[in-house]
Amino acid sequence: MGRHAAGRLARTLLVVAAMVVAMSPTAPADAVSRAQHRTTLPSRRGDAVATFTVGQFNSDISDEYPSVDVTKVAAAIRKSGAQVAGVEEGGASIPELANDLGWPYYDVRMQIVSNLPLLDPPGGRGIYTFVEVTPGRVVALENVHLSSAHYGPTRVRNGATREQVLRSERLTRLPGIRPSLRAAKKLQGQGIPVFLTGDFNSPSFYDWTPETVGIRPAIRYPLKWPVAEAVVRAGFEDSYRTVYPDPVTDPGLTWPVHRDLPGWNPTPATTQDRVDLIYATPLATPTASVLVGEPGGPQISAVVKPFPSDHRAVASTFEVTPVAPPTLVTVPQRLVVVGDDVPVSFHADASASAQTVAVVATGGDPATDAIAQQPTMGAADGTSTFSSSSWPPGAYQAVLVDTSGASLSRFDFWVEAPGTQPSIATAKPSYAVGEPIDIAWQNAPGQRWDWVGIYKRGADPLVAYYLLYVYTNASIDGAVTLDAGSVVGTWPLPPGRYSVYLLEDDLYLKIAGSPFTIGA
Image (cartoon, rainbow, N blue to C red; front, side, top):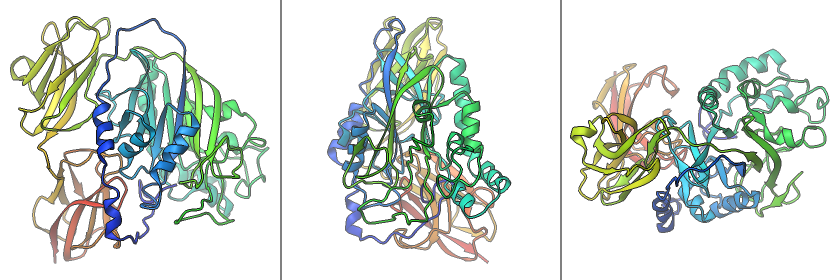
């Protein structure tokens, strides 16, 4: 389910300050961060069918921090057989999770861990990334976590009509899936297989049929759940239900799980359903699907004890023909430290005459403003590695340049000085009641659910409620204007003394803050 992402409800966390230290990234996790740069895209080969296993796991790390054991989350993903996994509620632990798995690749913007190379395309915008399934051949992967507000099956169980539930679903969850479906349509048009993982917080309509009415208390009538219907109409197939077509004999329930851990556990009245799903376009054929969960759980293929999450992990295996990616240039880490090596991977299709990989300040012309460049030596695929030791902190772009000097592709990344800390501030120290509040931040981690919260002056977010919040959209340097249409919470704030905080990845951990005032 979830806490406050996209409308999730907040709960107060009472933890001691010493526990916060335990969430700091470890040296091995940092080593994983550096290791993921080693993406090479060797020379292309003929298309061939590959076996590819995709996992999906709402880890519950952020929702039950700090009680969830990340090693148990890693164990569940490992036992699923997944080669790459979409993760929800990662709680700033994606590098640590990858390290525990022994996997060299991860994406904090999308909350993906992988044992296969990941290529963040310039046009992906955090909606999709490429997975290099075989050398020089990729598929696209999208990962979503939709709102848990007004959870549909509970509303059905409590007596809501079909029309009331459909209206609620269209308002709360359908808008959240549309960017992924738009991107998938474009990718399918390019012949690229697309996989969509997520905690959808909404069931599959394949499970709410006349035959399943009454098998669980919530299923009072058949229902075409709008999100699932939109996904299927966009050309995706439900992998679990393809492998197990009968929802009566194989319900495949993923939520909730009763676990032997501190934190929330379901009551007997909690509705059960299959909301953790793995979809794929027809270019991929599902051949198997498994659940990993708690001892005694239904239809479990592998057990982790104690089980860390209130969701079961899912993995589906596919036969798929990966394809050459479109022309692109990419940097595996969007935020690097001065002195780090910066590997810039590139791919040029047959119609592009790539000649040079260059690095420029954002917006610069590689012909006149390149601070570093290397020739491609005629290669269609490769990695050029640059040292950032002499680069001043700031915003940069890697650029793939053709023989005429034109830019074929650009990728944004940032360089920060060693020891630089994130910062956040309002544009001015005081605002009138109802006046829009302009806020900017720098050097944020760029994680999926980094967020901005407004609190009473100096309040501890581990024990106090936020008054307003908005997500950073995984930006490293960014800005937002808070007003009645942009935030969750009560607007306008009354006169008083407040603090704006930058907080990590759906956690109540402040990483930057500054004061401001609202006057009468």
